[in-house]
Amino acid sequence: MKPIYLALGDSTGTGVGAASGGGYPERLARLLPVKLELLNLCRSGATSADVLADQLPRALRSRPRLITLGIGINDVGLQVPDESFALNLENIVVGLGKLGAPIAILNLPDLALSPAVARLVPRSIYEKRIEMFNDHVTATAARHDLALIDLYALSREILPDRPELFSSDGYHPSALGYDEWAKRMAPAVERILGVGVAATG
Picture 1 (cartoon, rainbow, N blue to C red):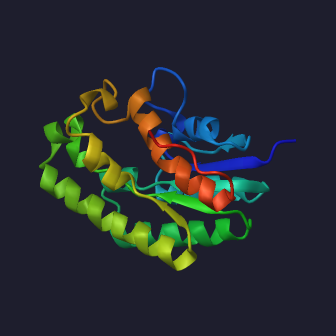
Picture 2: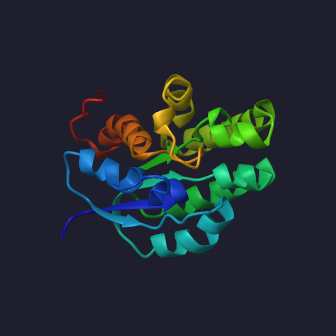
């Protein structure tokens, strides 16, 4: 039996926006030199409260070799107070810590750069909310010694000049966008797994 890769999160974990190939968990699993069986608990529309109430209890019944957690963008969109997000995130991570597996946590990409957000709200307001939530993700990662995957920096590096990285909804990543996420994740994940670091080109 292959060791388990446990993924918790939202629609980016399920691959919404990609025509094929799944979300970042499937793509990351294909890049890793060690073969893991994916247990993907991610759900479209999930908030941090949903992960805490629904995904975490299921996760605690597994014995993973690797855990990834990517959550928060729906909290931003639904105007969840950042303090509530921070508390939920802390409780999720404390719970996952009981499983004894290395954890990689994703911060939020700068979706203020997305075409959909630009049509709906002033970018500066959305960007400030994302930065505030990312401060909580960074603090949580530091407290619990988690591998932090900096999707915010990645998005600011590549999104402005590559519209093909967005899906047709102007919000979710395209298949190419998810590929970029997985490539950014792979070296950090390989380090915490103790295996050789993949090329990121």
